Image (cartoon, rainbow, N blue to C red):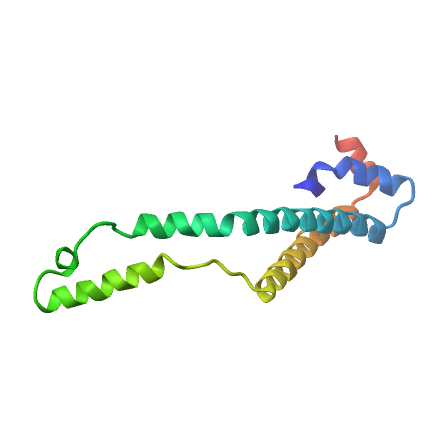
Length: 137
């Protein structure tokens, strides 16, 4: 969308002598900058909100105050219910942990998508003649 919206700017750049490679490089650098900014914001938000969100999700999925017999019934089911209740106390003690590998893989995927997503449209639009772009708008 950014490339399509700035078609007239690309026409002006071509009219003053800018090469196709320079135009594509400009759009790729803008895309990579926005990707890094988004990654930084996402990392900060993820680090601050991962544990509180997980705690809310875990606590909302667990039933509190139920007896084991109510969960699985009496007899043998009561024993199964006890196992489930013990498992619930373990689930409540979960911690959200994200390794550096996941962060790096996510960043690499975002960069590849940003580069491809900006390079292809910029290259295609940079092929047009400046007179066509400036006359058409």
